[in-house]
Image 1 (tube, rainbow over the protein chains, first blue to last red):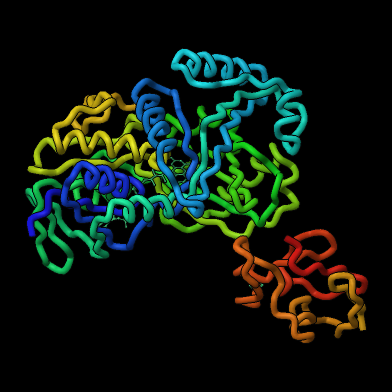
Image 2: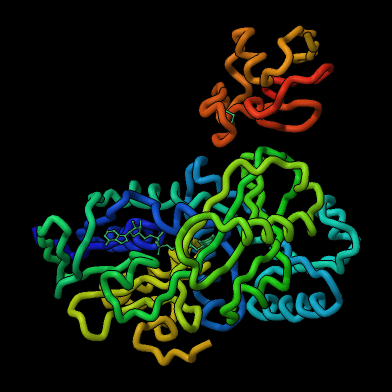
Length: 364
Length: 79
Ligand SMILES: Cc1cc2nc3c(=O)[nH]c(=O)nc-3n(C[C@H](O)[C@H](O)[C@H](O)COP(=O)(O)OP(=O)(O)OC[C@H]3O[C@@H](n4cnc5c(N)ncnc54)[C@H](O)[C@@H]3O)c2cc1C
Ligand code: FES
């Protein structure tokens, strides 16, 4: 059989692409060496967040969030419209919150400045003495691997548990030696994309997460410190930031760390310790909570922090959908729209140019 | 023989054993209920799986890693 599209990778990005392409009438086969929703998708936080660091990031996250809100997810996808509460520790960060608010308002998104007193009322377990915050009410959280499985179930596409060893012109070769021809190949292998296409500018960026026992009511919003923006981008140094998420089970997901050049995927207790200290500094009640699991994952980082979405310039039939770093859960749905438009030639609501693999990358 | 309380009921247990052992000696294997309402109990017995957690003296702790003490208040299925 000659497939219209073979999607390599059944993480959230591959699943979203397969879903969208099947919807457009394509005959789609999905291949993953581990199964559905593995890789970074199993490790991520599942925060569906609009980010406004630059215009392309905003467009992709915002458009994707609108698509998330149209999805009729099953209960076990654990979607909660928790909203994001960006927390300001001092006046300088509060000014940052005010600037951030105007960016959201200009783009017709809800964003409410929160005074110190209102912050205490919204989240009583935050430490005292904080300056205030910015509430983005429409952000939500999901359980990503379940969503990946749901998208594939919905699209009815065939999924095979096999490893791809080589990308061919209009097809792939499996480790078994079998060749599968296809009009188009979508590469959605996340941080492992460089194993198949070595010239891609993707670096692994390790992250740690911890989850607690059930503590219903400890927090209501995804809480992120505003200085996260400083620590998350640009710098090559290891960093941790206060980033905690209420799960629908009553558990609290505690993030997050960022490390380049990590030797392996093992839990690094020094970084984990820094991360948990940061969390308890903002939320002292977390001291008394039992952390039941810790794990790590790797984000696929590009030099300019934007994903690589679009045709590979030199390989026939290959469309890239990788390099989503810390926003791939959010941006998977917008990515799928772009990939579908590249393959079908139909127009897309998003301008594809900022994400093209051939763009000029200004090294951040 | 220390006396502990399990869900408000007094229970005399051997000294120097874990809370988990004390419960299992009574035939109690379920220490908590999962999110979806299923019974859960000890799995690894050595502090790594966190499946045996229950409330002791107001705090969620691992039953297999906690030695019985006079007057301990154990709550099964705390949430
Ligand atoms: C700690 C952490 C927290 C995060 N939090 C968030 C968040 O809150 N919000 C958000 O939007 N994003 C978040 N992210 C980022 C997000 O998880 C990723 O961007 C996203 O999951 C990437 O999805 P993907 O499908 O591209 O890659 P992956 O999920 O890594 O999937 C790639 C798949 O390809 C398969 N594969 C690889 N090579 C081959 C091969 N040769 N043959 C066959 N199959 C192959 C793998 O088995 C895997 O299943 C976080 C990431 C981390 C690490
Ligand atoms: S039984 Fe595994 S931690 Fe107690």
